[in-house]
Structures are given as structure tokens and as C-alpha cells.
Length: 600
DNA sequence: GTAGGGTTAG
Image (spheres, rainbow, N blue to C red):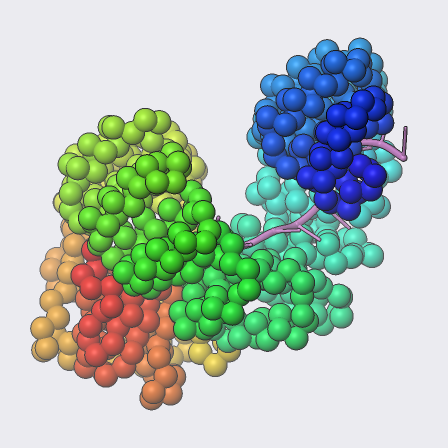
């Protein structure tokens, strides 16, 4: 009976049965515990797991291999790797499954080096690796050369035709930053199944190659490969970043037609997709129809309002949520960032404090990052710094990143240097950090320091993908980088931009050259403002979309202050609604006003 | 009648 429930993914009932069994004095045997321990693992109930572990000892099954393996796996699921290892070390007999389970426990706990070491230790003891052990060790691999080594073992053991192994190999390579190799392997597989396709799509999405992800999905449809809701989830995520409203409509239609079971998961992904494609209205419609709103769907909708600069509505929704669903850490990220995007200082603090007081949630680094962002954007850099000093944990790169971003806005070199010092350790591989600091130096005329940072970045062999702006017109996606001349309409765009800039100057636009280099003459600086990718995209949109349609562009980095101001004026003189989205939020420009209020 | 191992929303 216990097995029957467990096999059907019902994990709490068998625990009840187990307790009844004990109460009426029936002695569990060595077959009982593997099931019960599995249930504990799935329930993530550490207390229960430990009680059952005691029972195992009381009834004398601690040296049973099967029971031991189950304990190792259970503690791995509890993220108690050291407990897994203790059980593993004390096992009198080990099977290949014991090794495999221990490697899996390491993988689940992020102890990748330990996992790899154990795998090689296992080979040293001349134990033949099983498929399970190889699959588990593959999730520990983070370096390309190791990936190649493991792949050789896969081939040596004749596992290279196995679907689950092939899939893990593809994921392994993409985790090592080599989607290209993953793709080559993928292309070489003849009988690719749905999961393999889905993994490859997901791999592209994870390294932010969204266009490639969508392209592959298109191929999948063309080749008439069946896909399911997991495929759609990856595709929806890729689309969310690309913010294509048209694609959003198509996928939504698809989901409705296919009547998938996992309503809340898919619908939540769709809510996020509509939010990021600019339509709060469509997002809200799905949200309102959702039958079982869980913490994820509420959080998504709240962050949606936040992204669109509608902080008060985000907070209202949060109030409604509290009546039915317990908020979690991520809900508070949504709430606090909504406050930060709308400059709601008092509300931000109130909710930050309520986390622990009302909900028993200890603020994590990411919540401090939101608060630093909120304080920093409004220019309260000293207060932001004070908060960082008071943090009970070591500030992570998110916190310092918020501070550095605020320093860019308010040109504060002192704190920028402080933030950067930590970031160059904590997030040394992220070129954006170097560029930001270098630009802060530049905008204060500190050319030498700026060059030094650029040099450091070069020395560490880091390259930044150019900030670009994307616009979709009639189902086609166009990309612009700074000073772009690759568009066939380039001449026309620049001509029109020049006219437009002159027009908006007459109605009060003052160029903000804080965002350009400081060692050039004023006149050239002004001209450089014409090269911003955001402006090129907007003009392209004005030239090519119908007279009434909304112009929506998306910048992959934060929109600069000058572009923000310029857009406000452009929407005024052209009487057009313009929506600009950057990595963090939407700016809705209508009749020359921006719904986000003051940009900062 | 027992254990491990492929894709999954904020």
C-alpha cells in the first residue's frame, strides 16, 4: 500500500500508513524504508526524515544497502549534503547505486567538485560507472575539458545512444558555456525525441540566445515533432525576453487550443509573457481567470505592475494576496522592486520591515539589494551605504550592483569605487561592472582612471556585448546598436532624427551629455546623442508603423537619461504613444508624459 | 514488493 502511493507521487498518505502500522505493532521490514524515506525527501520534511532515520536504527536496518541509499538520497533532497556523506561513509556495503546517490546528493547541493572527485574515486576503486552515476556526475561538470572527459566515458560505456544520456550531455555542454558544441551533438543525433528538442531550446534560452531558441522551435514545428507544455514553457520564456506581443498572442492561442493540464504553470508563464510584451491588460485577464492562484502567479502579477511603474496597484494586489496565499521571498522581491520603480520610499521600508515581523521571512541579500536600489535611485546614497553596513550577511553582487547603478545616476565616485572593489571580486567575470565604473569615471572627466578600468577588463579577457535596441514591426524583429548604419533606411532615419531633435529642442528639450564621453567638444557630444540605438529604433518605428499604432522598443540595458528625456519630447511633438522597455521596467510615454514619473 | 538517472512558470 505504501509503495502504491509512493509510485503514484502521493507522498503524505504513505507516512500516515507507516505511522498506523507502527502504532498497531507491525514491524516494518527492509522493504518498507526505501519508500518511506523517498516520501520524506519529496515532502522536504527534514524533521520527519530524521525521525524515520531514528526508526531505521531502532529496527536495525541501518546497514541495509537499499535503506542506506535511500537515506543518502533523502538528505541530498534536504540540502544536507554532509548528512548524506555521513550515511555514505558509515555504510558497511556499498553498491553502485550508493556511489551514484552520493554524487547526486553533491550535485543537488552545489558541491560539484566533491561530486566529480567522488566519481573519479569510484573509478579508481574499479567500480564500473552506471548510467545513473554518469548522469549525476554530468550535473557536476562546469568546465569544458571535464565535459569532454566525461563524454569519453559515456562513449566507452556504450551509452551514447541513450536518450537520457544524450540529453544530459547537451545540458552539460551548455552549462559549460559551449552551446555550440551542444548544438553540434544535437544535430548529430538521428532519432531526436521531444525532450531532446526541448532541452536544446532551453539551453539556448539559458544563455540568452532567444532568437536561436525560437528558431529551433520553428524547426521543431516544421519537422512535425510533437511538443508539450514543457517545450512551450521554454519558448514562452524566450519570448518574454524578446517581448513580442504577436508571438505572445500566438502562444496563448496555442495553449488554449491544446487544453494542457498544467494550467497554473503555463498561465503564469503567459502572464509574465504579456507583462513583458507590454500588455498588462492581457496579463490581468489571464490572472483574473486563473482558478488556483498560487504564490508564483500572484508574485508574477505584482512584479508586472511594478515593471510598468504602477507601484500603487502592485501594492494593492499584494494586500489582496495576503488574504489567501502566504507570500514568499520572491513575492517580496516583486513588492520591493515595485516600490523602487515607483519611488515609494515609505511603503518600501514598511514592507521590508513587515517581512520578518508579519511573515516570518528573513530578508535575504536580494531584498537588501532592492532597498539599496530604492534609496540609491532617489539619491540617498549615504543611507544606502549605511544599510549595506548593517546587513547581517555578506552583501552579494546584487547589492553592490544596485549601489554602483545608483552611483552612475548620481555621479558618486567615492561609493562607486567601494562598490566596484567588491564587484571585481564577487562578479569578476561580468564585463558590465567594469563598463559601468569606467563610464562613471568618464562622466566626471577622469579619463585616466576610466582607461585603467578598461585595461583591467581587457586584461581579464572580458568583452561586453554592445547595448542594443530591438523593435518589432509587422512580425519582423529589427536590431539597432549605437551609430548603426546597417539598416537599409539608414539615410532616412538619420535625416528624420536630425529634424526631430531640432523640433524637440524648440519645445524645451535640453541634451544631457552626462551620458557621453567627456573628452570631446560640446558640439560633437551633441551629435553623439543622435547615435543612441534607442533613438534610431524610435525613428525607424515612426517611419514604418501605422499612424495610430503604439511604438514599442526594447533596450537590453538600462535606457540612458538623455534618451528618456528625448523620448518624452518626441512623444509630445509627434503625438504618439511610445513604450520603452529596458532590462528592468517599462516607460510609457503618452502625450509627452511618462507614467514612471520622474525617471530616477 | 526495495535505491539513483532526461526537459518544467515568478
